[in-house]
Length: 202
Image 1 (spheres, rainbow, N blue to C red):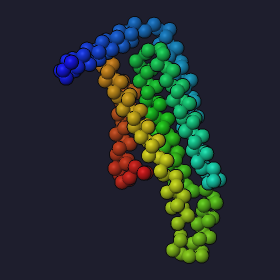
Image 2 (cartoon, one colour):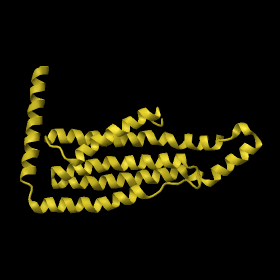
Image 3 (tube, rainbow, N blue to C red):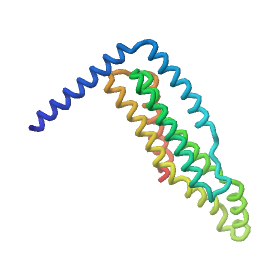
Image 4 (tube, rainbow, N blue to C red):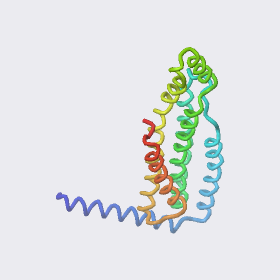
């Protein structure tokens, strides 16, 4: 089969999929739409709890374990949001895709705040080092921050991938709504912030 024939087949499959999803959305029973909305609202409470829980490393020896625990929690919530897809409702599918991305963005922001606010033991270590040698002033805080920031990039990239998926899915469905617009804004903000800071916290 030639390249052009493969292209025609791929286009036909995409059109068929799109038509099927649009038809399914149009025929969505009101009860299923209500159930999808109710499910999403329950998940919103879990999302807010996750996003608002502070991240701290009072014991820096446990930093990796703490981060792994938050990653596990974020992945679990993302899997729960994916259950919304079974309702085959375009609006709440896009909403869930957005929130899956927002989960990882919230985690990245936690890491950044934690990196900018070293725990008491790091601050005390920094003071002691500074008294011994003024050239070491700020060294402990910098080393702490440098140890935390490498975790930000992969988490933030998962968020960006999620926002892209939201936008791409909306394009396939041929619709747009507040959730899609939020994904666009979040993605743009993420790249703008990276450019402003100069690094993506590698």
